[in-house]
Picture 1 (cartoon, rainbow, N blue to C red):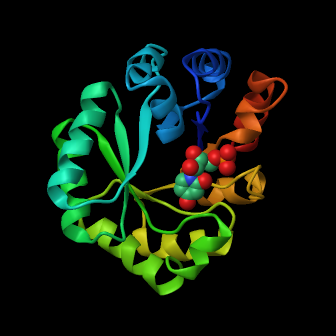
Picture 2: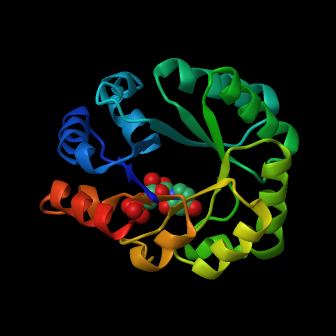
Picture 3: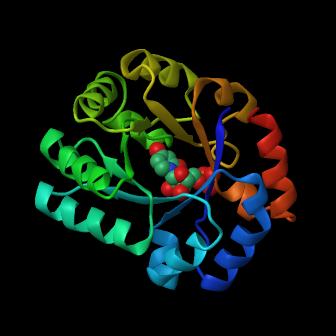
Length: 211
Ligand code: 3DU
């Protein structure tokens, strides 16, 4: 079954705890990135981890290998169980994230192609395919691929086989949950859940769609 992952991009501790608490029964994991940790500090990770769901660090790590290692160590020490790295930096930088994540017993996902329109300017097509292939060779646990372009997800699936595909872009960015769910392992949804009038109801509805 496709997992439902909440992108918890709210800006304060209070909102984060409220939304996470209400939606947790319908989720398989929570993704936390810069909007929340810059707003509420890294201590929010420990607090949200108390709900018992796996937490994915969306830091899109994109630096030299040593800096990638240091960032990844911070993430796992803070309580994350997976990290997202950019792939365009190359195999040595990606390997640093993958190896560090695995040292902590966690996972690393590599962004192969992004979901917004501008992604088509540099990181789609052949380059995205090369990144996906490299992610597999580096031992990554999966890739990030765009829910806004199901045909690209299918093409990337051919390359990565049974590695996981986590896919953002459903709802607010225009991706169709019903269409993308059968193609991927994890559906990442942010605004369509946390901005909904009733976030728990929205999460529940997505949790039905993904089956
Ligand atoms: O558009 P939403 O509000 O459902 O949020 C999508 C989340 O996924 C958000 O945290 C964004 O930073 C992340 N993401 C993408 O949207 C697209 C990507 O290619 C990679 C990550």
